[in-house]
Length: 348
Image (cartoon, rainbow, N blue to C red; front, side, top):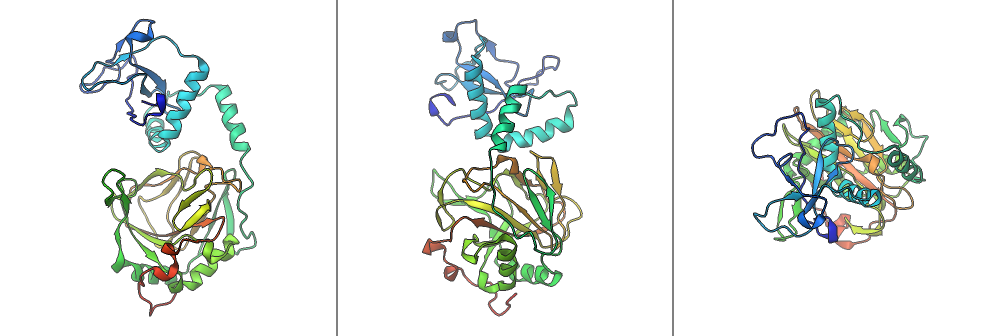
């Protein structure tokens, strides 16, 4: 239920009226209540950006095995807008994926938001900014998308730097892990199925210098560098890199990510593109190319337009990534000196 600040949400699809329902699907099979809410235990809310799909939202606690009954009486527009906003925020990654599938499969999909909703969203995005300033004089820096601004730099890393970084990292790759909130055990991250390793700055000083130069920042504003390896089928589902407000994370205290920098370490002919579904941008990995975008503005407001995904790999993909924060890394547990060496004899 979304109502009452509860967190047990489930998304279901509602069938189009002209389509036959398939066995096992809830959509189109719910009993409809009369105009009295007391007879129902849920309502349906159009999924923003993914019409004609809807979310089934519980309006009261539903016991296991209890029949789901949909309320048919219309909600007040203000209440519906609030629920749609809650669904959009809670499931923005899933909605972005659904939207891509719908756009590919159904040419007659109508936008779920009204003109007033669209205008309100545009006004909200227009209020974002200013953003972290890059070194616009950096050689090869070019803007590939405006509002939100996304930049790329061809040959940011040399072929030799890419090859040596892969060779240095390969023996140390481990699955991307995330802590299970219920068990407290670190387990495979379902969002990012690749393998990775941390890279000490002391082993790649030339790369750190390039990053701090283009990003107009100090080395201690960089999050721990990571090399990621995606094999066939591995992916990073739609996500954003930013937060709204101040956070304690990744060795930074009461701070926020201001910029994302990632560099492709190999050419990828098929699969593995970096997609920004909100703005219709897709980037195919090219060896040595860096991409920079801004997950939040200087007022520490997240820019959800930078939602992006690493599409499932077909050919193997290698990536170097880091994030620029608005203040230095301060938690000693994340100090560079604590990172295990990869190959200290090979300094890039």
